[in-house]
Image (cartoon, rainbow, N blue to C red; front, side, top):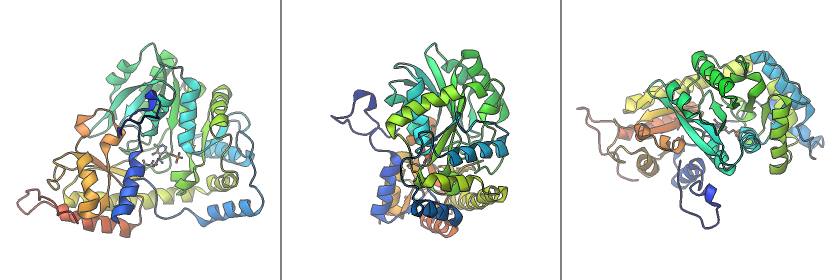
Length: 406
Ligand code: PMP
Ligand code: GLN
């Protein structure tokens, strides 16, 4: 996690959460005129038919509070989408909740399910909102590592993480920041653990359609899991509208009702006119989803090849829009410490990246690893690579000092 200074105003359970690394690094990108490969957002919008549907909804007067669970047409569209892609069946009236992005859905679920002092199993590296949600709930994280270079789930550590206080597990697959898609044996181990210890599962599947190698399998589709899983996703990544913050949670009616109880006091409802537009998006033909993934795969390959040529040690991601890269082979500045490297990189070469430590509590093995986003136009990736080429090792293989600060 990013840490951050002690605030005299923040409650003790929230000390150290500070400002997210994404906000901090995006501000640094603006201040230094850097190419921002830090925070994960595309630099082009999604299909015009989706934004036109939102404009129509605004002009058509769909601007007042929607129903608490979300607009019925969006809830129906979520159910049809889950049926089309995963053969899962949810009742739009009782088993779907529309939220302010996946973030609110995850946080509401943790707040709904956890007593103070309960434990939540998180996979490390983790998306940064999970430990924050656990802290908000007064619960405690138990971390289970993904191990490089394959980023496979440490199943022994998983088994050891369960205690009598364990309430739930949060599973993010496809995974940010590693790009790992958990495979069937890993999902089966998670399912078996949840069933054996009567744990709830919350899945974050926001990268479900951005799979480059392999296949995404929802945890809820494994035996014994449908009745104990809240499945979460959102429109941001799939349709390239990250600023809309429309997400959803699906699961058994009693679990979704508990999540709704929290959501109704956090935000009550979300973004009325964007909901019919996301319903249109979810109904797009299969070709939209495969083409979006294919376009991203090309950009993944472009950035990964370029980073390798510069001297980074690249871990090619199976999914999502981030690549992790080791910095040992590039520039001596930062002294192998990815935090320092990322703080100095904008000034030195005009590129922003995120240190992997932002997704970890204690992972010395990832201290020299940074994350780059490739959800950008090819020419933007090329410009970032051109700037990063100043870090390329010398002909004798020696690492250069790196360019002087600009
Ligand atoms: N989960 C993961 C794993 C993410 O990477 C992100 C970042 N976009 C989110 C959730 C946030 O999703 P949303 O914007 O829908 O809240
Ligand atoms: N999910 C995005 C990322 O990982 C960031 C979203 C945010 O800034 N909260 O970069």
